[in-house]
Image: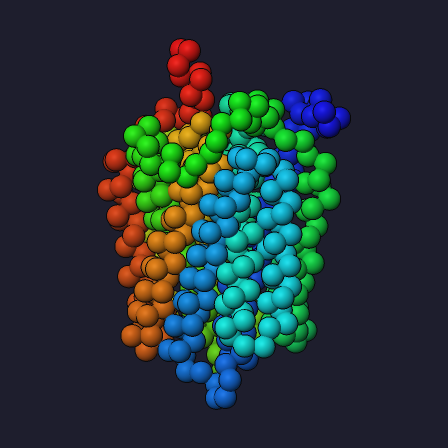
Length: 426
């Protein structure tokens, strides 16, 4: 037995597992933030021939985001399944390496199709990171800490967004191109690997794998887990589509607003910093709110607040200034709060032996559906002659759909689902 296994339940290794997960998911958020900020500038450079129109940029921006979401969906399902079979830690290292390498390759691409391909492949690692980080933490820490830890996991990705906005703003102020900004993201992404290496596999996972049960995706649609899988996927779609189909158009929207002004080069990074501070606060509170008020009541509050915030942000903004920064902070507080809520709720739907597979599938099927929605948002923006406001406000109505869907979600009682063997013995 690996000597690290002996200390799997000791506080030091529990904290090490948490730090590794927060770093991995935090740098995942950084990579996402960098691409959200730099894709518009990259597309202007990577189109052959003439400079594309704003309507064309909006369409291909949507396509680029869709490729990311679909790649993340494929990676989330695959890495989730591999994590249940071969270990949370081992597959987490592979996922981090995948997203870092392809981010680096994106920095040296020469055509928009290469950018889309590298985003898809890198996103496989990004998508795989989430279910592995969540499973690693919830299986290492006691039940009483889960609500706070779920918030911490959601918060870490948004700390990554804040770091991306901050270093992008600094580099852009010195005239750095989008290639250098993305390239730095590649180097930062690798920093979590030394920490992950020293983390032992969770004892819960090792005991579960000792039974050598075969894990098959179709089991998620057996009568026992079907409702959990379907509702987990739909709720994930609401959170993801609201973020990617509406809120993450903010940087592109502000970039257009600021054209021709003194702050044209850094406006999107400035607003992203304001939004990221809100995102750090909101994503942490999402998990805490779920633990305090319960899963369903907290979800309803978040849906209403996020819808109002997005409608105000895009509906009231006509120029770059303090108002859009404040509204971005408010939107950043409520929209990403779902990513603190989901790490609390999704693990409760599945037992240990298929937890990474189940929550990875549910979250990432949400990404597949969101990818279609993002393409629709890009087409809407193109149809509205490059008006990102109307497209974002239309997509934001998904939060109102979320108010209906939560009625049909399983009531977990706020606790992790017991393993099948425990259910039979109880």
